[in-house]
Image (cartoon, rainbow, N blue to C red; front, side, top):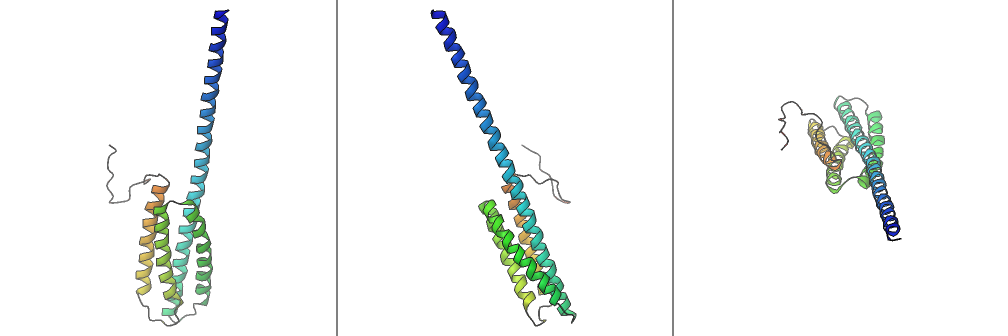
Length: 170
């Protein structure tokens, strides 16, 4: 009788251990699946937002260059306005998904973009060259956002750029 009780306890202990281990593994797999799903959404949000900012910059640049050459820039201004409206919506989605450092970098991109838009909306053509500088500042802010996004996504830089030294892993 004692040996049967010991055997029964062993079977129950084995079943409990198996249940706990399986449950733990399933929870870990679920958390990994969930994290991967959010990382994919986050990456998509970064890409869409940054692409849209570049559309805004391109349209603003075209509007200012048309104005400098005395051409009609109404079409470029309309395109710029539409891209800006889309950028604003994409920013809200990005802020919901990204970490604080990336959010701060995205806010800096917004500020630089708004500075460029203000200049592009001016009716007078007194901004010769100034739009190039503001465009450069937007691109610098985007580069900072790229770094923050890679950190948020826990990514290493995929390939060293020319002139960038690759440091060996410790």
